[in-house]
Length: 399
Image 1 (cartoon, rainbow, N blue to C red):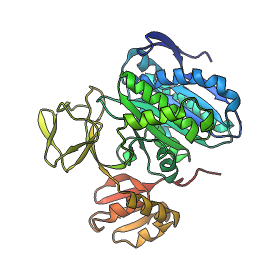
Image 2: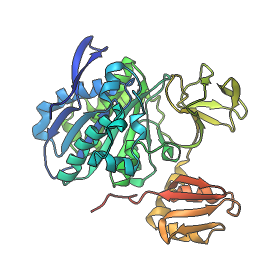
Image 3: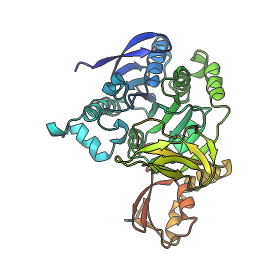
Image 4: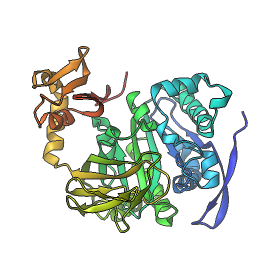
């Protein structure tokens, strides 16, 4: 099948580049780890694609040194070509298992074929082919940028294997985003037992974001053990570049609030907010249909929305102390989630330890904190009943 090719302008080098779905496929040891990069899931975020194009060209001469395999893919090609976040629907919000199954089977009526359906079918076709024909573990790194000037950071689902990878990258790490987002691609592949995380390189169309993405790509190659650190040109320079860009912030944070925006609502963020900025309870943050939106609690503001498209107005996060990260690791290592059924108002769902049913009318206030420590972060609510779900694969993937 002939690949669609688009032209993007590399605003750092001042020239046009040709981009296809498969930016690069550089294979070394067929039994080694498989590192999959994705750029441009949102069409107004081209810097990840530009960085992949540049780094993959530099990596090709090092192919004989690879201990694994590297795949660089572009996301929403048509949206990238237009410079828009998406055409009809957000490509990073369509990865529910039933929708992926439909994409695998191409089970759509002609009237249902919108741009993002076509993009999903083709993108998943590449990923599915890789996962069915490669023996080693898979690591996915999704490259993004934000609408506000920001230090680089990582967002990811809260699994121990994700933590182990992310903590080797000298930037802030934000966990728990899966509680609030509607099935992004990384959540789906995480459920398959893959390491996966999103790297936010900075602000849209900022040359510094391209540089941050380049550094992240090189560090990921080493962290995944696809290539040895000694073989990477300027590894230390890339490491210190990211550490400097992150302003020395290497802490771990958790999301505990999301401001939703319905399709019919008009959201306007108050100017001047940036990622990881301290806010007070009841502070004016935004306007929703002209009405003031006040902060429900103190904390740090995260990913404030300063663009037209999107349904996440902002998040509020808080720092997680190293002590509690250590406690969480020990609890999970000892499989102490088995004691959760003895907490008031908490019971397993159909005798599975991966899903807990919580009656919020009965459960104590600390139940949520204990569940989070054990890795239960995804939630589904119905009245006083909340289902807390943890990932099946925490320490390692299948096999």
